[in-house]
Image (cartoon, rainbow, N blue to C red; front, top):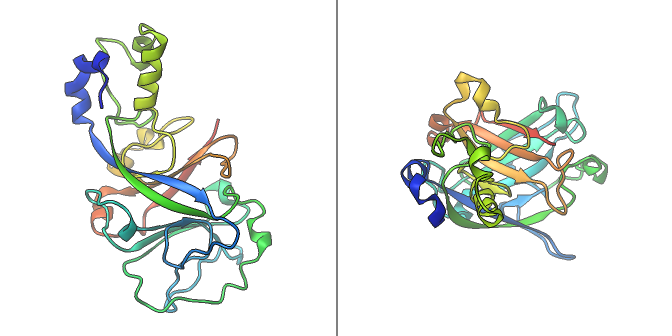
Length: 251
């Protein structure tokens, strides 16, 4: 909901309105196991026997940071309603953003690989995600993200920060709660600790947020950073994930 003190700017904010799916990530409990096809952070992936397990450029097996089964999430415009997308990264050089793979399995009916004995505990020693997480989902609405390049709201001739300084503390906090889109999520507006890389690349203007993984108690990207996966909107509609890309930044 748009707070009453921002009612003047409602026409601008309504134009920015987007749905998103919030992700609640809960570390799995002792003895709890997730199936190969469930949505998760870390854990064993769904890999059909017809496909090869992703390997790093140096021959090291990649680790899966995230798996999203679209059949488990609320329906989101332009996003698949079924199929599994996965983010794999180099186990130790993930921070370079140069050695990763994004896989998409349009269905999960094919017999999966079962032998992951080559995925050793040592591969996770430098993982930004500390343990396997069970994911649950909730659909919400956003009215723009302060760090997203598309946020161009005119606050009576003032930018976001100058306008915010004219408000009492309670309303300043309301603005931050509304426009700083932190946390784990699918779709909607992205959050950055530095700046939006799409703002400097005209070829990326039609790229949308596929997945955001934020820092929390068991997840740490650098110094309290946030990781994002982006994809061209037309590619997303066509379920073509070949050019989707991984990006992260930190304070």
